[in-house]
Image (cartoon, rainbow, N blue to C red; front, side, top):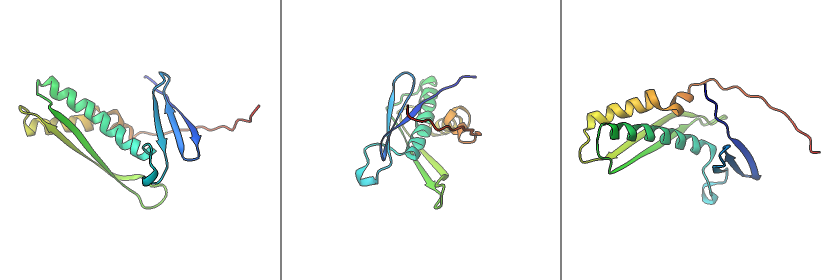
Length: 138
């Protein structure tokens, strides 16, 4: 079993920063759309799902020796109206521009990517545990 970890630190009232042990940083904010500087946590969830699925799908198409001229995934999540405002549904639309790929082979790759290989998609069904503590300033 391998473990990964990040630290999320508050920078200002609506601004946060997530970093991993290697020093890679992701900015997060909770501003209204007009004032956004970074993605919200829920947008990052969609980005993580799309990113994970993209890596696997592109890798599989290249393994099949198909040309990948352009590739993108449009990810849309529909949220619950109440609290918590979780995603009730998430839709991924995969687009591959390729002179030599076939529609049916790409559909199979997409299904494998999301249903079998994407760790983020599988994690959305995982159990989550947590602990908490309060520290006093010295």
